[in-house]
Image 1: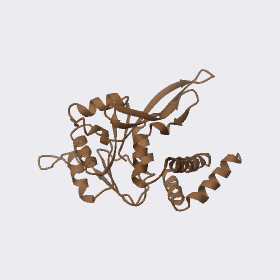
Image 2: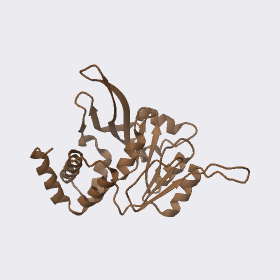
Image 3: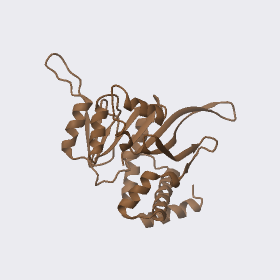
Image 4: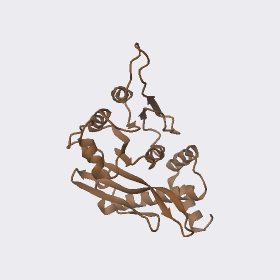
Length: 258
């Protein structure tokens, strides 16, 4: 499902985008389009494309909009633009409307300000297209006061929201700043429920699948497996043996082996 990561400068938008893309199925072809190459995918089925500025009188600039149009020839499952700022956003939404998956980042404080940027100049996304971007992820950079008086800088996903309609945005994941933890509210997960209907899976099965995946990711964190290449290897392994690795991870975490 298409998703957009938003936040102010330095909030960690590209970091979140990169992390999520490394969880994409190996069979899905991903094409990334950037001004400056920042995304790093430990994935064979990945085609990175970088914009080129004009050099001298004979050079021709190859901008993001040109590359988004060109990327459709690769028949990608997911088209990724490192950051949308102008007319390339219109082409991305066009591609999403034809059934391609899409992902990008946007400078905006929250969903409301993000929608206003998309509707206005120079992106000019029609209001009926905005809900095609199903998942909206808000990241923030904040300073927290520690008990000893020092401050600590944290970057966190503060909410994940699903857009049913441009005036109907539903928060599915919320961050508790006091506990520094996230809570999941599946009752608001309209996009997920529609997807489950399409593939013939009931909600209880989906909840268990989420439990298995989240448990395994927590296990990787506890084990100190944070390098993106290592995480990718583990995710591929989990896709082959989900039940066994879920049981192993759950047993390890419940046993207090940290």
